[in-house]
Image 1 (tube, rainbow, N blue to C red):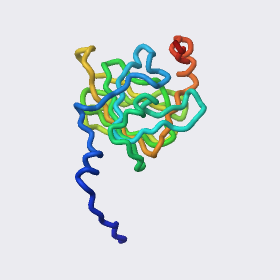
Image 2 (cartoon, rainbow, N blue to C red):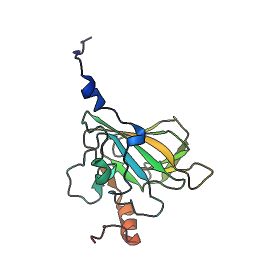
Image 3 (spheres, rainbow, N blue to C red):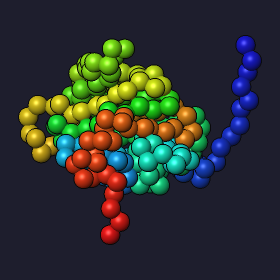
Image 4 (cartoon, helix red, strand yellow):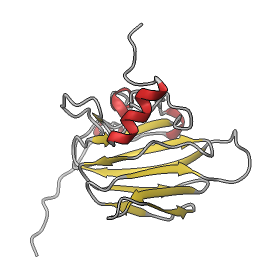
Length: 188
């Protein structure tokens, strides 16, 4: 077995690689569905998530361009980590990624849905610390389904592979956004 090289790292360098939850700045915008009723949520970019280079309006960083600029630990080391905070009944529209995406509920219950090979939507509900891992290209979404106070927000962790992963909303989701008048965003 090959040994990995060892090296020391200064305290100052390590301090740049720490994200304190109470200091995180989240974003509620920057994604095509950000203003769609029922899709409102706050996304926190902890590690990575640089905006992908694309001309496709439906394709964006999984956390949106706004949160991509707010990375608490702005590194590119093959994976990205973030949190979603949402009220019950809220979550993104159907979309896919060009890489793996793994969800871990931290608080509350979350429904993870996907399109099966027949185009039908299936789902599974997860409780805190359960894990689901979607492969690249799978059409998926998540939604907070925690019972109780509809004004309380719950937290979901997500890990996405790659250095600049790309999310793309389905054609149907983009049509729904256009019909609702929330996309494309009108410049003021």
